[in-house]
Amino acid sequence: MTKLSYVSGTSTQPLLGQTIGACFEATCSAHPDVPALISRHQRIRWTYAELKVRVDALAAGLLALGLEPGDRIGIWAPNCAEWVLTQFATAKAGLILVNINPAYRLSEVEYALNKVGCKAVVTAIAHKTSAYLAMLRDLAPELSAARPGELHSKRLPELRLVVTLGEVEHAGCIAFHQALGAGTPADVQRLAEIGPTLQFDDPINIQFTSGTTGFPKGATLSHHNILNNGYFTGEAMTFTPGDRVCIPVPLYHCFGMVIGNLACVTHAATMVYPSEGFDPAAALEAVEAESCSALYGVPTMFIAMLGCDTFSQFDLSSLRTGMMAGSPCPTEVMRQVISKMHMPDVTIGYGMTETSPVSFQTCAQDSLERRVTTVGRIHPHVEVKIIDEAGCIIPRGTTGELCTRGYSVMLGYWGDPERTAEALDANGWMHTGDLATLDDEGYGNIVGRIKDMVIRGGENIYPREIEEYLFGHPAIQDVQVIGVPDNKYGEELCAWIVLKSGESLTSETVRDFCRGQIAHYKIPRYVCFVEDFPTTVTGKVQKFAMREAMIAQLGLVLEKTA
Image (cartoon, rainbow, N blue to C red; front, side, top):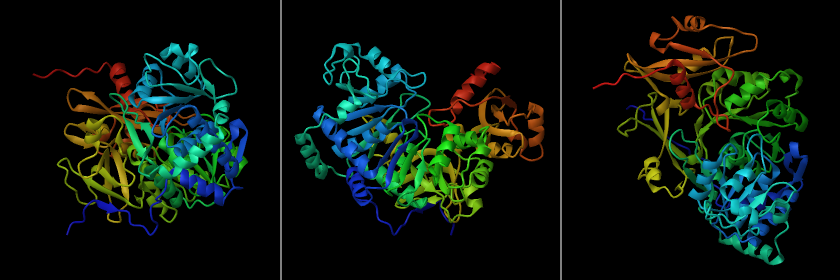
């Protein structure tokens, strides 16, 4: 009988049946003296006992400022200690934390705040080229004359409270330190009474997915979703109390706040923030200075760290494990991370925001071959099936769409039942839009996105296969392959290539490298040498932007057919 592409994650470890606040309390009680947070750029070092004092104070302060369980509160800031305080304080008070992308501009933040009806927002004043408070004042000029906590804005009708990071007080706003001190004994008592009323299936977090078309969707996640996903990712990396985890990935994304913060808190490990935003040298410096045992990043981050001019100067021998996720990992990059960065137990993770995020993960016991060529096996308590266009489960080893079901699947897209129904079917399966295969031992491999698949002259081409081959060229540091319109074949392949320092290639030498090694129709017609790729804040490459740029650059126009 043909083995079908279906797996379920059996486990002797039960799901955590508690809220984030209850788990946080338990960890702080059991490990009060273990370092909880090290924010190097802020010179902050807190134990779990010290973190708990501040989290409780902020939770009581938010209640004192008029917020109620179920209210939405946005956070718009780079990585910092205030981010983690807000994450756990809102969870304890039953507030729904809304992660706002630090790269958002006026129209995007207006849409996000209004879509979910944020009553409050915690914001940095500015970061890099983003003037957050100035943008909020543009959207809500009424803020300057409003009493703090009593904003009434035409364009942001639900927003009442703006909490600003930093010591300086701003007109119409509450400074973060004021929020920390706002709670009264009555608020502290009310916080204690709220805790037992919260249920682990309650929504606690909204994350906007970075769609390539249309407005972002607000994936709504529960305590149960993200607490358990953080726990089981930490289990796969064998975290124990005192492990130090370097987190250079952004907290506004699941990678930072779930695989980072929640994996640490569920294991009494230490969260280490090297900088506000990703900086390869700062991340390497943090690993050495703090003797980190784990390091996180998307592939582009690891490529940047490996390519750092001062890479050889850092002692990374304390590293043991970590995770590379967010986009498919080139095999050669994984090999270098294991050998050059002293990460023998590094894991590969696969998932998406809507699944909290991880569904597949490798483990330390997996062979090197498995860890460089697959995304591992199914996570505990999760199901996956791979289907064809008709929705039928396909045989092992064949390519189809990956669907997942279980505790990790989101509650839905906030205020968007139509798009929720498009993603979640009647049987609870989340349709990911990712193309994948499943082998006979249950290891998954992500072939690409359905929308990234190139159809050239009737041939289905998966860009990742070509990217993996080109990574084998000694002069190539990074490569992305996309499809661009073509009147004869429908689509043609285009490779964007970042060369290693001091190396040079031509389009023809790249094609020569491919000839006789991969099928002729997989050889890129266009080759573009670039310094870097357009990416999101999380480091994900934006292939749609590359496609648009090439269409404009090459003047590609499809002939109209009758």
